[in-house]
Amino acid sequence: MNPLPDLAARALGGAVLAANDESFAAKDHLIAPYPVAHHPRTFDHRGQIYDGWETRRSRTEGHDWAVVRLAVPGIAHHAVVDTAHFTGNHPPRVSIDAARVDGHPSLAEVLAAAWEPLVPVSEVKGDHPNEYRVHSGRRYTHVRLNLHPDGGVARLRLHGTPVPDPALFADLPLDLAALVNGGSVIDASNAFYSDPAGAIRPGLAANQADGWETARRRTPGHEWLDLRLAGRGVVRVAELDTTHFKHNAPSAASLDAHDGSEAFELLPRTPLQPDTVHRFAILTARPATSVRLNIFPDGGMARLRLYGRLTDEALAAMRERFEA
Image (cartoon, rainbow, N blue to C red; front, top):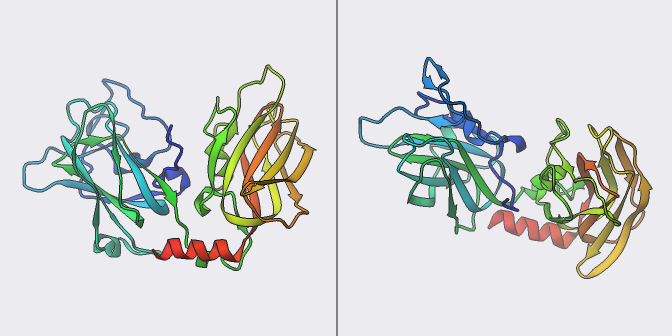
C-alpha cells in the first residue's frame, strides 16, 4: 500500500470534470474509492459492463482524454493507471498532464489552462496496476489522463504530498492532523481491517470501514497510530471519534507528542465510549511536530482531529511551499 495519500480520490472530494468520450463506460469510475469490481458476461445497451472508463474504438487521428480535479492540490510523486479487467481493450500507451488553476475555475478555464507533462507517453499492460514515478516537484490542482489512442482504464491514482493554500486558514484554528491540510500517517502498529489514513480523512465516517480498525489484540500491550502534523503547531482541542464502532471501540486512549526529538504528553490515558465523538481540551501550550494516538488495547477509531494553530515559522514555510 502506498503510504502517500491519493490526491485525486473521490473519497476526499476529487472529481472527473470532463472526458472527450465515454461511449462504453463512464469517466466517473476512474477515481472511485472502492476496489475494482467485475462481473463477466453482464451486458447493457453499451456492451459489457465495466467498473472503469472506456472509450470507443478510434477511427481518426488523436487520442482520448479525461480531466480530473484533484481533491487535494499538491505535489505528485507516483501515478497508478490501473487497467484491471481490461484485457483486450486497454490503451497501449498513456500519458498524464497537469495544470495549476487555483480557486474555483469553470470547466472552460480548466481546459484552457497551461498543461505540463507529468508522465510522458508510456507503455501500458492490460489487467495490471501500471505504476509511474513523477519527478515534477510542482504543486498542481488538475490532471489530464490521455489514452493513446483509446481504450479502457479502471482507476487513476495520483499519490503525493498535499500542499494547501495557507491563506485559507492563516487566522483560523486548524486541524493539524487532517490529510487535506498536509497531515499524514507515519506508521501504525496494526492495520488489519482498514487503512490508518482513514482516521484523518475529511468529513464524517460513513461506516466502520471508513476509519482505522485493528485486529483483536491477543498479547500484552496496546495499538498505536503515528501522525506527522501539517506543520509545527500547538494543539488546543483533540477530537477522538468512535462513531460506528459500537462493540469494537477502544476502552481508552491517550495522546503523546513530539517536538523534534523531545517527547511530552498531550492527553493522559482517558476512557472512551462506543459510537461517540469525544472532545478534550489540551492544557499544554507546547508546539508539536508529530503525535501518537494510543488505543487500549485495540479497536477502531473513525476520525482523529487535532485542532490548533501553526507556529509563525511553520506558517511561513507553508506559504513558501504553496508559492513555489
